[in-house]
Image (cartoon, rainbow, N blue to C red; front, side, top):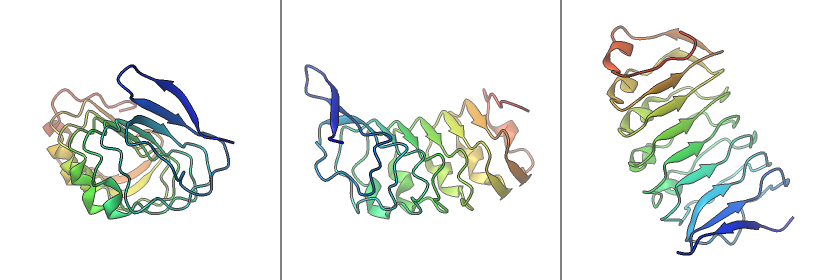
Length: 179
């Protein structure tokens, strides 16, 4: 199936949607002007070493169940990224470069059953939505307490063995579905 450029604004921003198309490899030609890319529900197992889309605001990689790793350099030029969905991937660790996502507002890690450490999330100071439905963790990372802009923390259906004392109380304005 060819790449679909489903919309293009007057100022040249575009949207790439290639969902449910059986992609096994990252699309070769990605425009630097894309503001949204959806490659959800494919068979991607690897990401390129670097994604050069400086205007990208939305990246949907959910339901790429063979995806196990995010290369550290992949995120280096995604300064405008606001929404990242990694739900239902097989990622076990978030890369050190996560702290470069200074504009990120929403992160979805739902049903990431292999994830073991989410401490890098604590560096996302503008994060407003953190969804970790159906994941298992020994402990909810203390670094989440640094997310002073967090409004939604969704941990429904998961199994988190421990929540550090006073972590939730540090998050003023938080709505915790299911608790």
